[in-house]
Length: 418
Ligand SMILES: Cc1cc2nc3c(=O)[nH]c(=O)nc-3n(C[C@H](O)[C@H](O)[C@H](O)COP(=O)(O)OP(=O)(O)OC[C@H]3O[C@@H](n4cnc5c(N)ncnc54)[C@H](O)[C@@H]3O)c2cc1C
Picture 1 (cartoon, rainbow, N blue to C red):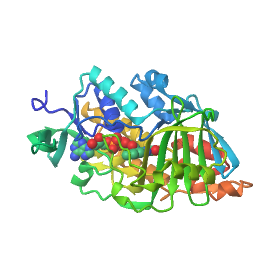
Picture 2 (cartoon, rainbow, N blue to C red):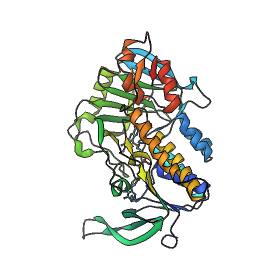
Picture 3 (cartoon, helix red, strand yellow):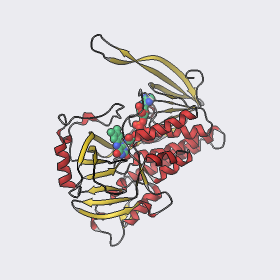
Picture 4 (tube, rainbow, N blue to C red):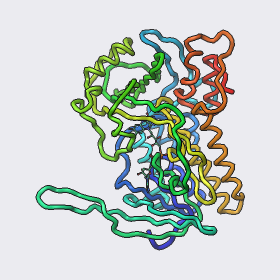
């Protein structure tokens, strides 16, 4: 299979965006291969909710039924500070399927992977892109097949070595290779920081608290805290930290179980969790059991200065990064994968010209400039609650929606997005 025939589109990265893009391409009957340098899929929740618009995208590839079987539905967002419930946003106020479906990222990736397998699309784990260059109407790509090699005796230790390298000439590369994107760096596209990074202490646990089909945002003067109900009796709390010095943790998407011990980072001790709840969410009274995932994550705000050129284009975290509250990175990423895959398929079939891809890139820059607060403005309507008005910018990045749906949710709060 691999090495015999180059695909028409090489998708770099088997995260949610790469897998979804590959599915769209495969349904167009475009020969596509996915490569990922990791040795296996993600094993954790990471981004955990699908916006209504993403459910429509999943319906297009025949997966929405399977997603909804396993997901937990969220219909409202409760806004809090301290003990006060300040406002409520109804996600279902607008169009047809406007609720949010809570499902862990690894489950979503699993469903996408199975759908690709059913269509015979190769997903090559332990395959890393190590060189890329456009020449004429092809992109020349070097792919290294990585292999675990046992090192030393007595104590088992492994290192990754290159077992083989392949050179492929492909008509298009779709770079969905995450925030450290090799594809983006090969194109020399800068990825500047455009806002202040945030650190969150994240805890997932079992609880008897039942807050109904609601996600909660605790918006203090400076800090944002988020509570997501998970399928079953579980919940995820994310508390924004004013400062955190363990930056070396970075935001690496770890394919192993990530469990940073409380001894190493005291902020992750159960005592700190109880302290956060007492101070920031005194209304949360549930018993806490089985804290099975706790970590500190750094979320940067970055935007690529372009989303690609010629025959190489970016989608997902490869082009943008933002805060976690509204799960916008992954959900907008899925739409990017959708739009880019359709555009590439149409170009390959001769139904569209390369300008379709340029338009894709321009649209991405425009939308993300707004979402990251670099362009456009959020204006309080007359008589809006001053508490809401003071948090207008933060709300735009924290509600689980984008585009027209997000504008509708902001209007419910008396905020107009220009
Ligand atoms: C601990 C954690 C918690 C998170 N929580 C949230 C949250 O609460 N809300 C939220 O919105 N987002 C959250 N995120 C971010 C979310 O996971 C990302 O937005 C999402 O994964 C982006 O999907 P993607 O497909 O664009 O990229 P990724 O999922 O990062 O996938 C990129 C893939 O590319 C592969 N790759 C990289 N370089 C190469 C190469 N040279 N060759 C081959 N393959 C390569 C990587 O191995 C990776 O599998 C979290 C992330 C982490 C790590």
